[in-house]
Image (cartoon, rainbow, N blue to C red):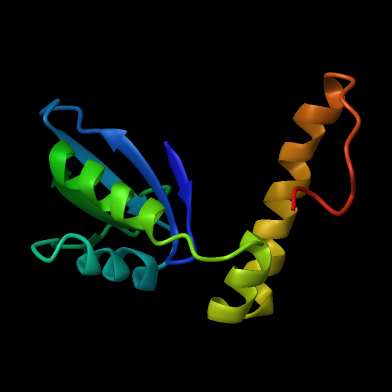
Length: 119
């Protein structure tokens, strides 16, 4: 599961050895550290050889609650603009490129799309 939020970007997968846990992964230390707002007991670690360098192992129930809090915190009418305001234009541009790449899935189905995106 990928989560793009105004707090950060997260990739979550089931732990290979314990199905009651997930490994939450991030591209930046700041994103993983920010999860302490939702999961105070979070213990991030770094694995320089991994595809996602910054990680934490959490109970699935903790992850579900964290995602719920992130969803409840939505207070903006435009996601990319909120990211730019909170994290600056560089991250907003990265998210914008992901948005554009995902738009190709929609366009490949023959659905009309707008370059301005969803409002």
